[in-house]
Length: 186
Image (cartoon, rainbow, N blue to C red; front, side):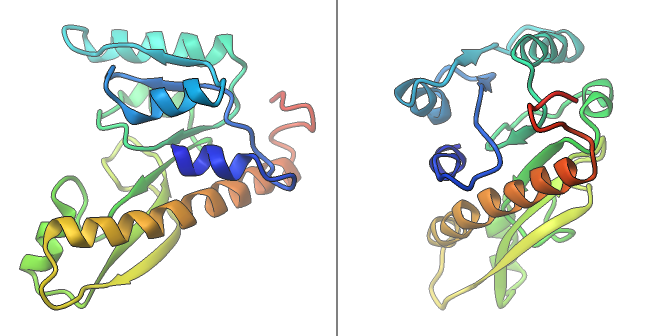
């Protein structure tokens, strides 16, 4: 989230981070958003039915006239209804070279399989976990002696470079195709 916010401050960036939402109070993105004077909300998911939680998030996004959703560390599976509502307008960053290593423990799995490279992917979100069309990827070499933690640290650097670039390209593509107007309305 911090990388997306930082990139959005550039004069030529086509997107603005207008809202940050998390289901966890301890999410680092909430504190970063507050420090940057970006509205930030926590909608705890514990004890809420998945559809109720997603409905509350959807209401919040609508109240803030959000055009795109960029998931960054949002470790919760979204309902098909929510995903359909944001189809083509919701992106996610995943710490593997999709379609390899969907889900969790991506770095440990790549190491266990003795891969030469790991990496990250930005993809459109679909109802299937980590299965949407890949919009961009960055490969990261696996070094001798790597652990899941050391590999994750290097992949995170790649994520911070890849995600803002791909989000910018996607927002511009959608604006050019006429899906959003210059004032941000759909």
